[in-house]
Every structure is written in C-alpha cells, then in structure tokens.
Image (cartoon, rainbow, N blue to C red; front, side, top):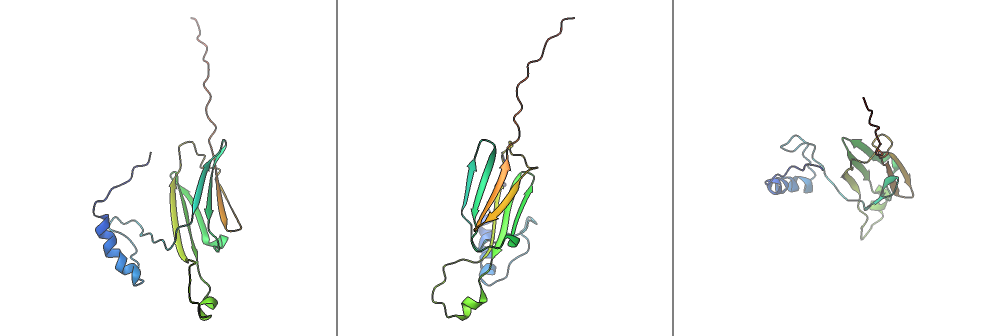
Length: 148
C-alpha cells in the first residue's frame, strides 16, 4: 500500500501556480522541493492483469518513441513524454485545433507481486505497451520432522 501525503493547502498552492502556467512561467519546484509537474494532456491508459504479467497500454498517437520516457523506481512506474504540433500547420490558417500538444506525465504504483527486474516497453502505431511480469509465487513446502 502506498502512503500518500495530504496537504490541506494544496488548493491555495495551485491557485498561485495557475496564473504562472497561463502566462508561460513555470515554477521549477514546489514548497516541498519536489519537481513541479505540468500536464498539457493525459493519454488514455488501460491496465490489464493476466496470469503471468500486468499489461499497461497507453494511447499516445503522434508521439515519437524517442520522446517517451518510461522509468521504474521504488515500485512506481512513470510514463513521461511530449507531443509537439507542426509549425507548418499554424501557417496554413487553421480555424479549429482539437489535437492537444505538449507534455504528459503519469505515475502508477506497482503491486508487490510485480517483477521490476524484467519490465519491457514496446511502441507501435501510437500505442505504448508496457509489460510487467509477475514474480514466481513461492509454493508451500512440507518439512519433515526428525526424531532424535
């Protein structure tokens, strides 16, 4: 189980950061000296538990594989990346833009049964697939009792 710190003043902290975000001034750290994370968009993610592994699929169309960072640290899987719009499209006189660009950041706590030494990630057709194998379950053993 993960312990999550609760900060009752986080709403007021966000109110102070929002004007900076709108005007393009991003603070480097928060009061807790943790990096300030800014999401421009959030990819849709499916998580599936199979018999041998956990499977995470993230829809990240338009993101280059080189712009995706997958890390695992202390049982926390982090997905980070960015998608940028083409400057050629901006010159073409677009009237409506619905495709979001910018940075994304997602974190997931892995269960204790996950084998963090053999995690793999594949990217194909705009879908990032992260495979997290399960650890081998220890089987109960029968222990012989010796008579002295």
